Length: 97
Image: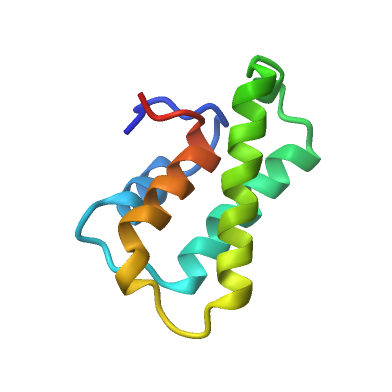
């Protein structure tokens, strides 16, 4: 995963912990990341201006995929944790290389 987030200022310890392969995701963690990203967009974080349009669109796509998953999922994310973590990383960091 990227070591330098596209959106600066994200609490690296918390995000790193959430995205670790063995970490058990919970709904509150996912909401925390989405809220943080929403806040940075609303504040018009200058680091977002340096992202390409395709990168912004990919990040938005994953942000919305995660939000829709939260809306439709009633229980945990155990079976989809790896995919959800990839989406969270894409939404917060940009493309994974």
